[in-house]
Every structure is written in structure tokens, then in C-alpha cells.
Amino acid sequence: MKVFLFVLLATVLEATGDAVVRIALHENNVSARLGFFLCGALALTLYGTSLNMAPVEFAQVTGIYIATLFVVFQIANYLFFRTLPTAPVFVGGSLIIAGGLIVGLWK
Image 1 (cartoon, rainbow, N blue to C red):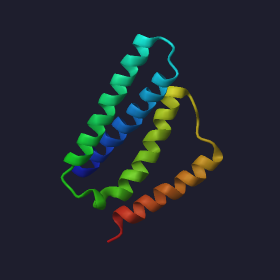
Image 2 (cartoon, rainbow, N blue to C red; image 1 turned 120 degrees about the horizontal axis):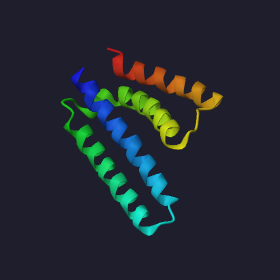
Image 3 (tube, helix red, strand yellow; image 1 turned 180 degrees about the horizontal axis):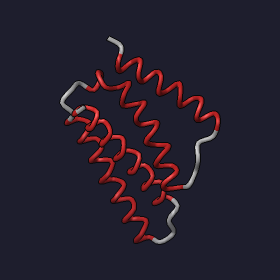
Image 4 (cartoon, one colour; image 1 turned 90 degrees about the vertical axis):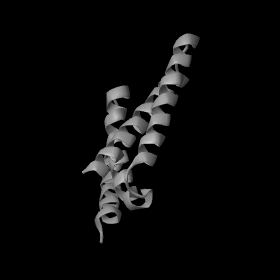
């Protein structure tokens, strides 16, 4: 459970940082753009730090990380941009999640 919390924190920070940088790219106000870039950079730095502090080798959690990242990116995409996943995203995402579970849980 502890490892999953590190993975979840990392994916939330990665998805949030990516969304904030995407917002910065489309911001017209220079001060706001800079602020968004700095916030995005901080979130992405914290993502890398949290992932590398996980008490397990990254190779062991890669499958769970990818599956969790897919889900968190879809949630962030909706929260930040009000975009719902399309049918191909649901189908492909189901395969990503299935693959992630196979890689992460197969012993």
C-alpha cells in the first residue's frame, strides 16, 4: 500500500504539472504565463522526486505506474480542460490498465 501511495502521488504531480504547463503555453499574460510555468515545473520536479523516493525499484512498479498514470491523466484532463475521454481512449486505456496490472501483479 505504501508503494502505491508513492506511485499515486507521483502520477497526480505529473498529470497536474503537465496540465499547468499546457495552460502556461496558451496564456497571453506574461506574468501569469511565468507563474504557471514555475508551478508546473515545481509539480514536475516533485513528481520526479517522489517517484525516485519510492521504497521499491522502479522496474517493479512500472506496470502499476503506467496504469495509474493513464487514469490520473484522464481525470486531470477533465478537471483542467473539461475534456471527456472518447471511445478509443476508453478501449485503449482498458488495454493499458490490463497490461499494467499484468506487468505489476504477475509473479
